[in-house]
Length: 403
Image (tube, rainbow, N blue to C red; front, side, top):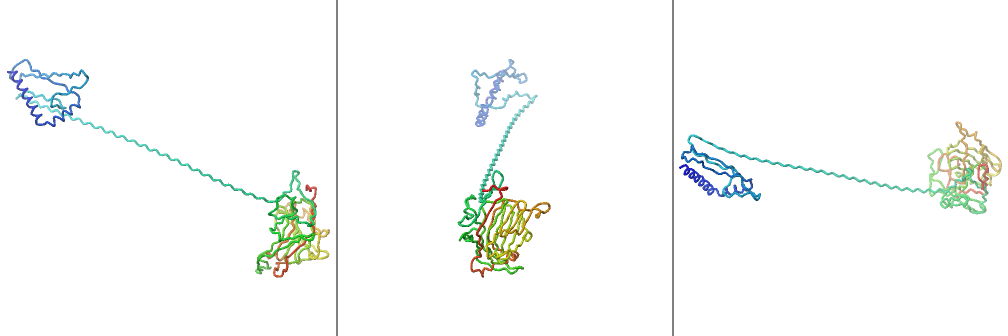
């Protein structure tokens, strides 16, 4: 009987499993798929005890675990149509005195949160600032002025007599810088300011294109000036004697000048002023310091007036004294001691060019008054003119290399 009871129990279990498969076919497939992905579960078998009692009290159930064999190292596929992830349920025999409740709850929660945050910030800032400033300033100033110096330290000076029997004057713009190429340089900018005839140099003043007489000041003066000649020697002289034979213009406002002029502003002057035909004037300046009416001198002319005949005006310049003379007669002498200011001798002592010129002294009230101007251009029937017949330059060999 006990054996029959066990068989009946197995039959009941088989029918229950068959009904579950029939009523849930899809669920079985899902579980089968799930099971295939899982590891092989242990297989259980039931072995009835040797006793054959019909009572369930004496019934014993033993569990034998069989390890799955895998000769080929492959997982064995389950053969049943219904498979489950959970452990198999084993029904215990009913016992009215024992109540066994088995509740297996398997909750597997796998939460894998992988957060990969890769922030690559590459900032490449390449700032190339190339500033090429090429400033090429080529200033070529060619001043055609001979410095008249040599290795010995002496000034190079040319001693000669100019008789104006030929034109030895070169225009400033045409001068090549070689002092041997000409005797004089015309600084006025036009050849119309002079002409040479009969062995004489005729210096002119050209009238302005237009002008008005300004009478608002204490002395009248012209609003525009005429253009006169200025000649500059090509050699400088450092001490020596220079003279010129001149018959000057008698027009009021016209000034005839015969002077020495150094690059730094030393100056020794003869000045012949129009209308003042009975006098000649002398002056001097030092180092460019202009002092109007301070160093001037007025000297009477013996014989014909300055506009009626040629007179020889000379400057004898040495380190010890400057002597002005008219027709061989000394009219003034200046020594370094006469020029002392605060212990400094303001005495002209630098190598100087010889200048000869004619200029309009009508441009300011004070100058026009001194020059007996202004020039009355409405009364002029010809250009105001001064004549020069000869110039002599004798360089002092003690201070010059004379050629």
